[in-house]
Length: 422
Ligand code: AMP
Ligand code: GLY
Image (cartoon, rainbow, N blue to C red; front, side, top):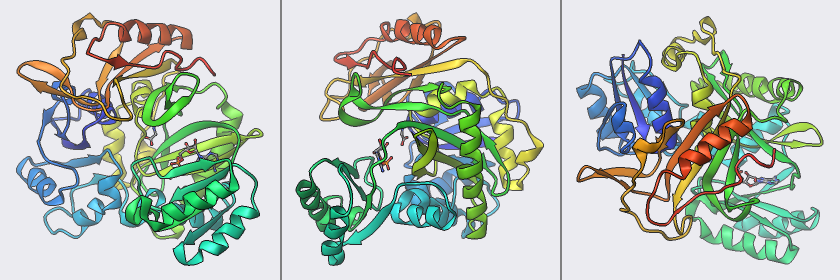
């Protein structure tokens, strides 16, 4: 099979690394990819949001399967674009259609879906500028802290958690007046849930699903979970508190009702579902859905999948996932993200990265890198994800941090406390 992966981050590099190991693969392409994906496939310099360019590549390169990494093209309807095109409609694509992608693209849609199918989540209300006074009354009826969420995609910045009631009312007004453009003309106000977060992932063909490894990610820039939110500074899988009993609750109360709910809504969901969960008093609740894999969680979970991922992906369009097994290693994977100094605020790109050949006991998944004049340079805030496996978390972390010290670029920064809290 010829496979095209859309995206350019560490998630896409780890997917590419895994798919490249499949005996079913003929040729692998990544669009646009990065300096790391180039080592396992061929990069094509097009944007995943440019559907016409994607079409040209799919036809020119005789692609048999497209795997969509990020949410943007899904929310914009890349699957519908394929289905509506006579030349593309028979080419399978891993990722939901526009309707299914609303699970991530609209917080209000996700909340209504969960309410309808009795999936445990925080109490909420949904408001616009016209209903601002009702929103204020709703805030007054709730306890601090107040959780405000832009309805639409806001590049991970659309959630505000505010202690003071009056500040929350002011912030809500600013959001509704267009702080995040179209994305925040509607805002979901949620009950604050106090607990530990964990992410579960499935691959579904619309009828059956395979449970992938769970992971915990570390979102804040600073150690001890302080400072600004980032795209993710590290991840660990498995998550000790997500034991068999907890996982069974997640399956019974969240995963299976979600898959059945999608069927009842007549959404032919074929792709990954990311369940962002929180454990509150021992019970799982949904914080958010994403319609893709997480980053950097993917860099930690993919190396734990022992089965042929391409075989599973190829079974999705035929709804034959249940014919295959998804075998998971019981080793621990730890991922630490090396970032550019200054990230998630302003930072410089184009710093030469050295030390790749020094790393022996870890996997290096490139996030923001590019090749320039035969050297590899930084090309983003998150630069390289370092993943190591171990029989224990301690062993995996030790390898990861040994490797992290060997990769050198100007103003490199990484958190030194990934995985220590669990
Ligand atoms: P989201 O974009 O919905 O994942 O929200 C971003 C982050 O905000 C989550 O990972 C949580 O840490 C936090 N968060 C979101 N909703 C809630 C909530 N209802 N209670 C507590 N924390 C929340
Ligand atoms: N690591 C969180 C996300 O991918 O949304």
